[in-house]
Image (cartoon, rainbow, N blue to C red):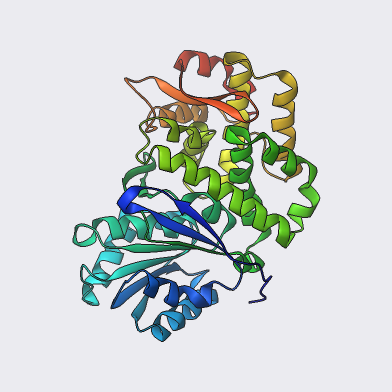
Length: 370
């Protein structure tokens, strides 16, 4: 790996006895073992990774753990959203049992969001819960899914319908891993960074507007800033509402429609960030009609996703529109059958729990997602 040499930043996630740090910097993977030793973790540990990330970084992390006195072994699942399944969970359980993992053992989640969610759910449920450490290797996982303790898997009926809240002991974000990240995956991760600007930080949104070319060229300085700021925002929100009973819902901006698109397309046509880009634009269009988002700000939101090469719409046949509405009604934010959205009042300010009638959505579906 080629290091971009930044001083490590620590972002705290304040959750009382479940508090932990997000370490952000370069050259951190070879230090994973020493970081775990500082947490007083001991003994055997399972590195859960996938067939794309494992060959790149599995032995780097395993060697670091062995050097710090741990006994690691690697569990590899196929790369892709299909591994975020109950079958993969069972496969992991069986390998943990075969290696005689105990309650004092721990799990390392090494990979993108799929691996983090899967490994975290396995850690939350095996032996009624064992510790785990997030080592995210994609932009999307570093700024979003690795932080906050939401873990789980998909069902055919919908995304993330089986899961738990299980906070990691530590999150290690090595910026050097972006060097092996395919461009499509990198762009998809930027979708969640843009989200933070829309929901919470107008100046972050402006930075992303003004520096699109440098961001897409993967400017190390800019990426360090974007990852740190995204993690700060998520940590602040999670610290205020760990189990999503109130304000944490703002993190779901664009996800109601985005998750629905992922579900009806069979988890694989869209990367998560691509579906969420379409969902965020749709949510912004609903906001212009429901919560007073100004037309010029709607145009800015539409334009920023286009400037990063993310999809801005999709055309669906009538049967697919019906399936999308049905999938949205399975969303975790639905209450008494009413679909609830996070909607924007302006760039940097959103409201959660906004009811939107199914009939209203159905009548306007083309204009919202096309």
